[in-house]
Length: 388
Image (cartoon, rainbow, N blue to C red; front, side, top):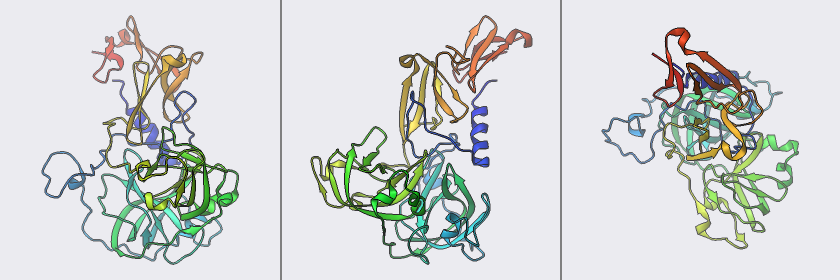
């Protein structure tokens, strides 16, 4: 039967090979924080309490394993970023970090992944922070800012973002939260080569002005071009507002560096219309209304349906004279303009008599169901298929 298995396998291949992608095209412009390659993984819910006896695989069912001793010396975080460092590992190498300090809480990085940022307590300045991610089904750690962690995992350059996918994770204590690194805003603007030096690190800029208000994806822009994102907290910014200081970790997603403030206290004194406590929202990245729909999405008739930051979104391709289909470069469903090979045939497909036609990987596929003594109809996923 024709199922979503092909989509899952294609996305898994991207994770293994570290392939590079881009943002959604003009018909579905989403700036979600990460592409979700594992839409079938159940994300722990944030509001479950100890003693929960329900049948779902929530936070109570996914407890951190017993204490473990992670062997070996720890690698300096700077060695992950600096390719000239004597200890710089090859991508996909197993690395160990010891006693690193969390600079953020855990957030949902994508539908199947949780993550948090850490800082190296033994180093100062640039290249001292990194993103740590893990499968939602592997751990349920209680990590807050200042938590000290030992971990071992795979070093990756995931869509241009340096990160460690944790396979073992041990909380070893708490510490004073690292102070942010003071950085000139001009060094973070698009085109500045200095930006990558602070990727993953906790930084602070001063005297900033909002140039573009908060959009549907929770981002706003500062004068100079630096984007501010809402992975941990959302601020309803308005053009012309000024902030005395702005603190956050420097993230990288969809080809752009983005500052990620952690809570309202990371926003310095605000001046201008709309500056109030009511301007803040704290997204709960451990719960969403997307159900089983991941960031890669799916086609429902000629509508692209996808999960963006825990919010279910839809784009009707009829509005753009396009058809819903799978984008082989970006690895998610988009509206494909008319004139492509698929024409008006969508991923959901259709039946022309006993012939099944559907759009897959931007290619029109035709299957003669009668050749295998089957008929063309819809399967239990709502897709047209050859059925017994």
